[in-house]
Length: 388
Ligand code: ADP
Ligand code: MG
Image 1 (tube, rainbow, N blue to C red):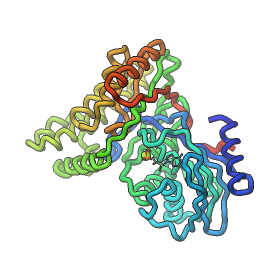
Image 2 (spheres, helix red, strand yellow):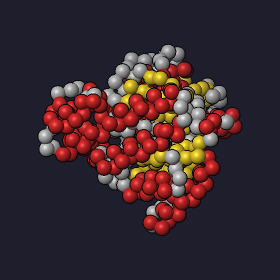
Image 3 (tube, rainbow, N blue to C red):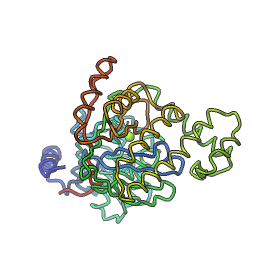
Image 4 (cartoon, rainbow, N blue to C red):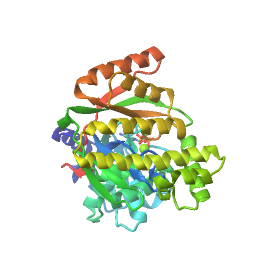
């Protein structure tokens, strides 16, 4: 994110609210390298931050008023009273930033009001966490302006609560933690049980590789209901196996666990995905830490996609087409990322193969009659920070 962007967002704030903002903050979207649908099973995830960010120009207020504006929606300025903020009362975009304010106050932090102008380059609804970026940028700005002294992981927890309770979306902890805590040039190995984290160097360019994000631009309408079903199925599996969460089933005990589940094929598949996915994250971490050739993570990404497609059953024709076409055009690895049923896929490729893969995927989409996908390169970027 450039100086110029911070300048533009600050200038628009001044137009809207008649004074310079007290500061400008940025929080990124994310892609998940590996570790899908593990975050609500207390498992492992490995996201990294995108160069795309939500940017917020913010001033503090003392009078219990919250004013919100986004450059990216047509609405004018929304004015709310902090005392009126009520969970699940707002079906608009304003629920995300207002939810972050609500969560801070609910946790006892003395936030007395704010004027906020937002602008975001994180594609919305593409599985790249535009929602978490909005929450985290607001929480970080208020943390600074009201000297709350909260750490990144604490802001992430509050933002998750904002999304779960205030917005009413049952998301895990990965997105907010990634936005708050990632570092440039690294992927974040996160244990979602205790939020312990480790920055893992992930510099593909230095090894002549690239990571592409392919946004299919589709979101299938049943995605939310299906997400809820997968979560419920995982909880059922944990209960049947007598553990707190599927994270507690060791990879070496998987066969025994599956045997204990008998003929409940639906639950067996969910359990198998989660337990093998945790093991894949651990394998990717050891590979990256070993200093060996990073290309070796390619096949693990493909295994992850196969597991999401066949066991967890949350892929869709568009995502499968990205993965199959990319692999047929020389990609080192590819998989769907995010919640599923649309959204984005990632492709690991040699720098020299990027153009051919992009062309092949675009042509395959045209031939299948799908909407043209948006393809861009994802460089592991910085987490949330003050920019002005
Ligand atoms: P994702 O987080 O995968 O992008 P979500 O459905 O969780 O998808 O969040 C998308 C929602 O976040 C949008 O519908 C909108 O309400 C809100 N949003 C995202 N970006 C902006 C923005 N720049 N301005 C206002 N609202 C935004
Ligand atoms: Mg989201």
